[in-house]
Amino acid sequence: MGSTAISFIVLACVVGSALVGLSLRRVLPEHHLNDASLGVVKLATGLIATLSALVLGLLISSAKGSFDRVSNELVEIAAKVVALDRVLADYGPDTGEIRAALKRDFAAKVELIASGDRGQLATFGTRESLGALERLQLQLWRLKPGDEAQQGLRARAVQIAAELASTRSLVMLQQDGSIPMPLLSVLVLWLIIIFASFGLCAPHNSTAVGALLVCALCASGAIFLILEMDQPLEGWIRIPVAPLRAAVAQLGL
Image (cartoon, rainbow, N blue to C red; front, side):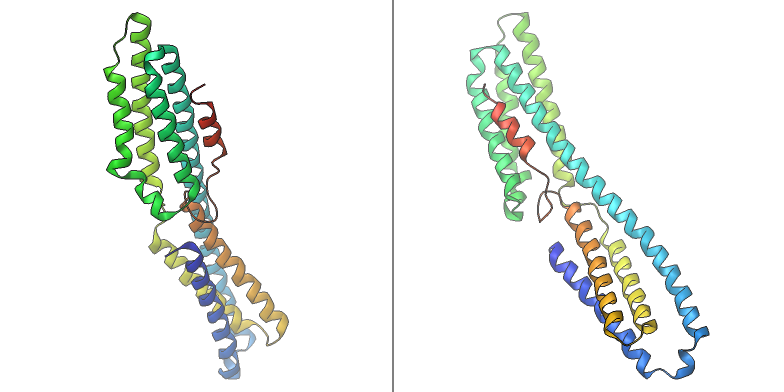
């Protein structure tokens, strides 16, 4: 289920709980709504709200960290691809075919990432997709250095290719997100309880209802941001591909 759908479900749940609280205020006996009773409700709600704020901050921090980590790893991959291309250029004309294949395969991966399509991104870690990098490594090993300089350049190229494979594996392992859904579910449950309490304590007027609706929108918006940043390669909030395309433009020069 996508982040947009989940956010709308959360919005419906918290708005519904607020309406339930407003309805309960009309049917509960008067002694359940005196200052002492509502004071206890407010204290309990404050405790749950504090816990919710802590968990919400933790989830936002985790999602932002995951987003930045994948972004940095992709930029690192782009930098290593450019460095590999420069090493191959220094090696000599024997690497012309390898450099052309490197640019073609990297440009294809950049466009795949730029698409943000879940179906296409699913092919990012397939055996066929990984085969291009394996073929590159095999071609590098097949190079026949003519002197010590070319031997050193080939060793450097092989090292960069190995680092590329390692970094790409890290990106693949993190593209599906790291937010524990049980923790997110508990947070949503706490929000439902909080908004039910808000409805119970709120007066019956349009100002109070409007305030509850705005708060519900903000809460569901926070859940939306968490889910979007936790999947940085797809959705509305995606990693910018401008640095990757800039790297493609430098290949083969």
